[in-house]
Structure formats: C-alpha cells, structure tokens
Amino acid sequence: MIYLELLWVFFYANFMGYGGGPAIIPLIEREAVTAFGWLTPAEFAEVLAMGNALPGPIAPKMAAFIGFSQAGLGGAGVALFATIAPSLVMMLALMGLLTRYKDAPQIKKLTQYIRPTLAVLLLDIALRNFISSWQGIGWVHLCILGVASLLCLTKLKIHPALMVLGALVYGALLLG
Image 1 (tube, one colour):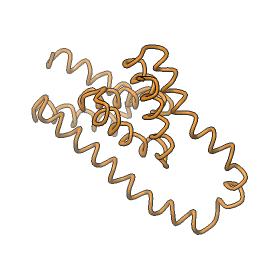
Image 2: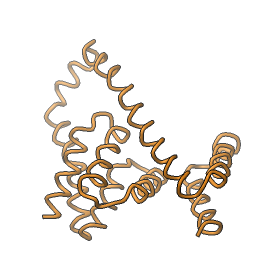
Image 3: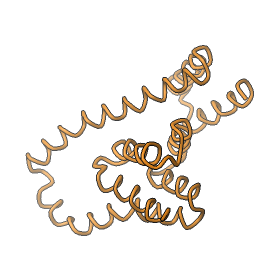
C-alpha cells in the first residue's frame, strides 16, 4: 500500500504543480506531512533545506528521501518515477502545442496569474519555517543565523550549500 501512496503523492504533486519546484513543494508538504504523516513539519523543513543545498531540481531529491524513508530503495524508486513521469508524459504529448502557442497572449496571461500564487505559497512556507525555527531555537540563535547567512550570501558570496553546512555545524555545536 505504501508504494501506491508514494506513487499518488508524488505523481499528484508533480502533475498539479505548474511552475516547477516552488509550486510542487507546498503540495508535497501537504501530502507528506498533513495527509499521510510521513514527516513532521520540522523534518520536512530539514528535507527542504538539504534539497535546496544540493545541486539539481528539488522535487526528485525530496521524493527520493521521502520514498526511501518510508519504503527503502523500492520506495525511493517509486517516488522518483512518480516525480518524473508527469513531466515526461506531458512534454511528449504536448510538444507540438507548446511550440505552436508559446507566444499566445492567453498563455502569457496564465503565467501572469500563476506567479503571484506561487509567491504566496512560498511566503507561507517561509513564514511557517520562521515560526518553527523561532519556537525551536529561540530568537537569539535565529537572529545570529539569519544575519550571518545574509552577510555571507550577499557580501562574501558564499555558496548556499556551505551556508546550510555552516548552520548544521552551528546547531550541532551550540544547540545539540
């Protein structure tokens, strides 16, 4: 049954998530955390952070981790397949239409309507992660990590993966 659930969650999220990773993440979170209870909100935030730190698209990395945590290698395979299948099928089926109508005003208008929705969904996740962090480690550590991250990313141009690694070390040394 777990394989069918994994297939459903990741196929659904990737089929309905127009806009790539930013649109898919809230759908995966709703299913994996709320509907099936595979992860806690804090665990999902950690999976999201690690997925963002690693190169490549986020959805397959999250699918592989969640699938593996629920059903081993078979679960990871099913979740990865379900993540990739909707895009593959739709791209093959709609390639001609996409080429023909990519500059149509209706398609451009649709994209204009979807962007604010994605922004709201991302803001929602960011606020929930902020509140969870605030409650989990307190405002002092949150401010230290936030300011240090902002400075390192903007002024020192340190790669985000190194920032996540630095935050993990900080947490292990001072919070663990």
